Structure formats: structure tokens, C-alpha cells
Image: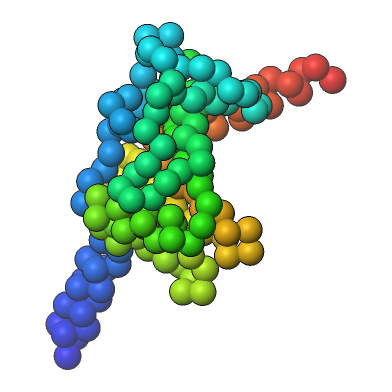
Length: 170
């Protein structure tokens, strides 16, 4: 009886640990590797700066993924390093097409709430890239956000250090 309980618990742990895993942990987006220095890339145009994140668009970027038509693709840089990409679009049919393409590339995402169209990948301990796909029924907009976990954590540490150093300003 005791052995059965242990085996059941181990099987549940193995199954749950793979819920957030996905089949392809992306090392890049459209050929730009995480950590690439913006100055070494061609056809990048800075669109806006928000906090310490520099958002760029790419000249002649294909505004489609699979059959989904996209409104924008923003390449996000911190400390001149490529750390994330933010993709957005409109319409339920485009969202469904994007969802199909993302599921085909990365497997089924984890949906925390069955009533909300939001899926996540890469939340596991050993994943390098976090992916979040979401659809807002009220605004009829969708977004796909991919970011490199290592560089994002590095950015967070830098921001915390700056905040701690700011104590000396008082």
C-alpha cells in the first residue's frame, strides 16, 4: 500500500513537472539570438523607449506568423541586448491562426483558467524562454510575448541594485 502511494506521487510529480515544458525552447526570434547586440543588426529602427527597454521594429518584417496577420512586432532590447519580442494583432480568426501556429511550434501551452484565453510556456525550472499568448475578447486584440529568462532576470537584478543605490540619494 505504501509503495503504491509513493509510485502514484512520483508519477504525478513527473506529469506536473512537464505541464509547462514545451518541445522547442527558442534561442532566437527570426534569426536574432537572445543577447544579440542591437548595433550589430541591420534594418532595425528604434520606435520608442519605455523605462530601460528600447523597442525596435525591423524594416520589411513579415507581418504574419502562419496564417495570422499581425499588427506589430517589437524587438525589445535592454542594455543593447535583445531580450524579448512583443507581437500584437486584432481579430479572433487571426488569434486562432496564431494559436494554431504557436501550438504547432511549441506544443500546447498551459492555460491557468479555462475561461481566459491565455497560454504560457517555459515556466519550468529548466526552460530558457518564457512565452505568453493571450486574447482579449472585449478589445478583440491578441498578443504574443517571448522573452529570454536569463536576460530578464539580469535586468531585474540591475533594477534592484539601482533602487538600492538610490537610498544614498536621500
